[in-house]
Amino acid sequence: KHETKKKKNKCRGNRKLQRYKAKLRKRGFNNEAITSLINNDNQVNQDQNVVHESTIPNINIELLVPIDNQVV
Image (cartoon, rainbow, N blue to C red; front, side):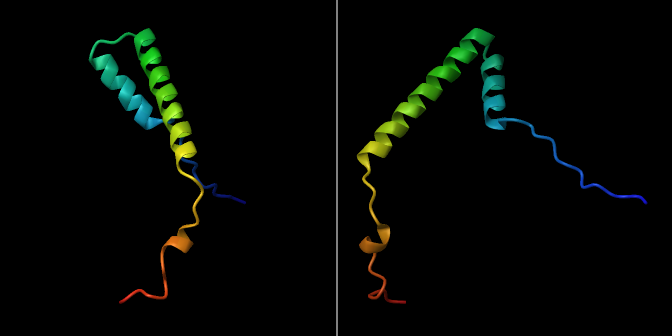
């Protein structure tokens, strides 16, 4: 019997990162400079996420928005 298998799409990886690396290579950066820039960007983003999470307390949004008094 002939069974048809569903074709699985290939995983292309992090496309955004690939485009960023290509842009840096086009500007003349070498691989070491590119990896250091990416590591610095990742570290800055992680630091910002930690600050962002610590400054915003956990608030229940349902308590802030009155649902009964809305005019349609």
